[in-house]
Length: 208
Length: 208
Image (cartoon, rainbow over all chains, first blue to last red; front, side, top):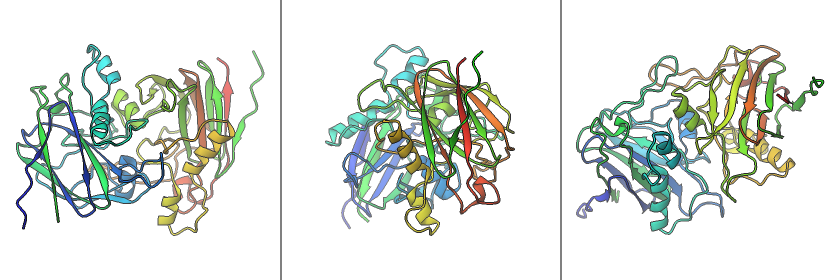
């Protein structure tokens, strides 16, 4: 059995992407407990030139007939193919599929000066560092550890994460893919905990 | 006051797109009452070459802090700009933002032979008929009249529409845009009513 790989940092307010082969497992660790990790996956290579195949929150909701995926569920691409199987979740299991990645326009709404980092920027930077072509839009992410309760009338609430330091989720790749993460830079609202301080998270890629 | 324009058909199982100028109003009529109308909007022209600006269900949920938009709400683009203001809704007000457009892959899951029409195909055909470049993916639509109740645990249900023949929604364009519709071809499940028979819908573009 090979020694476990050293965890790869997702630096606070930044992104990181990696190649994952089918069958490998991706462990996403909420190192400090309260960090939201926006997560994307792209089939590698894309099945058609200039038409990426992407992890899709809408198709994942549709195939599982639920808003909140978790351990035991399969996550699907926009072509309805299994991309990731959710194997483990040591957190209280609240993750979000409803809200978009934060973006320069959202920080402008908050009154921030231009240049505030964002998950949308982090995705593109992480892909570029891996040599993956820029996407012409920001796919809706799986927001790991993000706590978005839904009221009975469909109201969307925003709460600090329920996760604890060291909590992890474990996903198995069902195809060769690029996985991309962003340690969400949101420091205006308490979505990353009441301290409003983005922190590092980590991940490992493990052979089966 | 000009005579009202004749309603434009959205033929059953097909799509239709139209140019709309800022300030114009779009009336979407559920002619037979039980037809889901998948709806998309694209800024016209796009603000950057090869980077469309699209009506975004995730940003609309985020800005309104609710899953179900309706009369009085603004619908936002993926750049967080107001695209449409929802002025009127004579239906019981259940519309969906959670599920994707139906696609060839979904009909394959249903066991249909290849070639079953889909909202994904209808979008691209409707854009092509208007001379708008093909999108490299299918944006998640606003599913007008689609009745998707959410359980307290986040379970996604699928029910026939609550709308009645002649019910309409009225939207005001907040920018110059292309609006695209699909009269959903779903005839395997009762999402278009218990008869599982897609029907025509209609729309008008009205000056303010």
